[in-house]
Length: 212
Image (tube, rainbow, N blue to C red; front, side):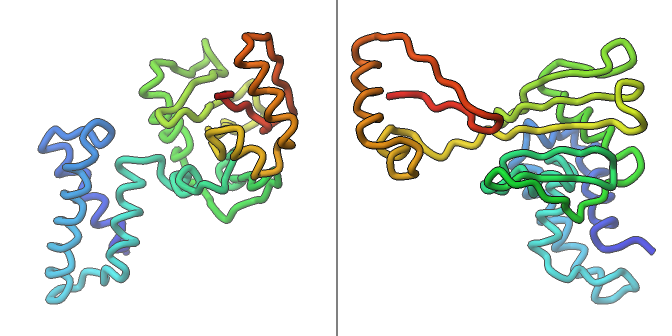
């Protein structure tokens, strides 16, 4: 028996199709539509055999993730503590928080991973197929996406998303985070002001900061 989420999701998708909405370019109207469908569903469920809606806000979030986001991966993209996401196979989704990896409980359904990848590549103009079995692209939020498909991988499509995590906007914030000493910050500040060449390097996930 379909869940309340499945029923609402189907009704929302049908209304999006009828009204010609694009969830990615028209997110505002889609959010209103989702709330309207859930409100109407709640009223119908009081006098029918429909499964109860439960937590309405949770259903709103899940439906929006499905139709206007990147499904089960959206929660990790929205989580500021998550730095990286990678999927080795549909049942093995990992994330990295503060440089430490962990296996999540997320399991993607059959064909769901390929559908999500197609959606992720949509705004980049890139594609992935047998003629281009691996691709690098930038997602709308600035995250870096890397996708590889079989036969480059053994059995399953594999993806990696390295998020654009900005924790500091100024040198003083880097000092406060312990990334730089106060003396090193003042030296960098003087080097930038003097127009000197500066080489910035670091390990994976270290990233780089714009010096101001």
